[in-house]
Image 1 (tube, one colour):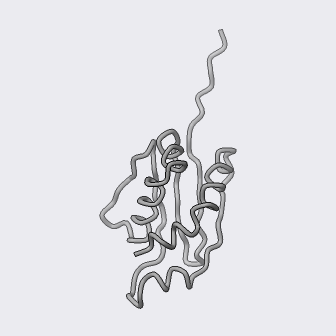
Image 2 (cartoon, rainbow, N blue to C red):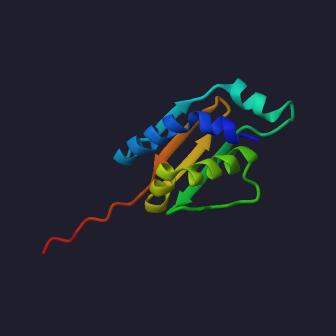
Length: 114
């Protein structure tokens, strides 16, 4: 349902995922009408609070909205984002103002001094 919409935003999502590696939360303001058109007039929940992807695996929950499920699919199918997802831990959320928030929660292990 939302695959084409997510693909539209994918280039910016890739950039924000890279920037999030610095430990800063990244926010993308999206257009409500893009998602509304994708629903075809159906009443669908257009938000999700926390979608965590840990080394390519999701905290898959049957209660995840179609919006979240389609985001996972688009990210996993893309070569660049798929590679980032396999090596790092990301958290995504979409609020009622259609802001996609991306957090990189990867823990960087410090090398022990000899």
